[in-house]
Image (tube, rainbow, N blue to C red; front, side, top):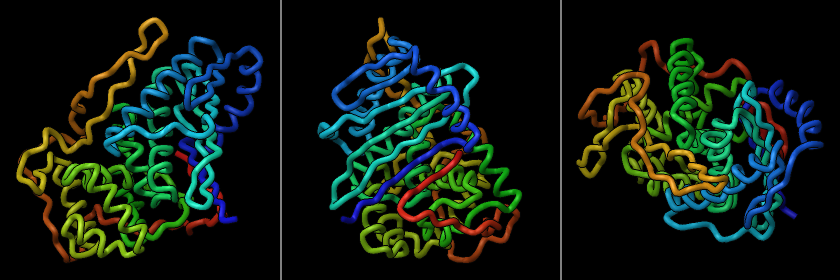
Length: 334
């Protein structure tokens, strides 16, 4: 049967090794909690309940935000194993199986401080499951990780934005033709996260999440990304998109004037606030406008669609390390 296992990791291997060494000890004194779509193993009953209730709320609200509707109940719950400590770096791993148009066998591991687990790691990993449930096939690496990063806490997004500038200045950027063609994660994976997040924000800011998802669906269906970007965003080809994005980054990532002519409040995709917890129960949250970019903000910027190459110091260059294929299992470290 045509089964595909997809796995997402968000931190370097040493963090996951640390988690493996300490997680079994925590489980001995840990606690379990069950919701409709998740089972949670966490160090304490309170944390297990917080994570489980937050997971259900993120699943519901992020599905509505991206898809316009809630997801149906999964046939089997997704097990979440949580390692929570103040000194742990934020990270996670989610795996699932694609088979004959279905997706199942969810598994999620998350780690970090309580705050980052609830407001960054959990929504990031749950967004992966929303995309998997919706598309029922793997997304392009840059789009999957980039879009999932947009739902993280502002502090995590700030890190990506700072790293992006460092990567571009040191010629670790990825040319768009290479980035769109990736079928696995490169060894030098951090630029993919930072650049994918920035491009996802750039496109979503122009025409919204629904157009972004339709663009991905068309590109995956035809494998013709040039046609997809032209149809949905009116860029002649990927080089034109790359050049326009580079101009936007150089300009300080200012707010983008959408195609409709209405000015967005910010070029930053609005980041959901983490679910509030009142007496152990996740309370409804409201969406707040994201804080300004670390680059600073200008105004009234409209994306150009140039066709000539970019030659300035921020020009993306091919990564020195080759792409490593790993069969049907996909892995990434951040």
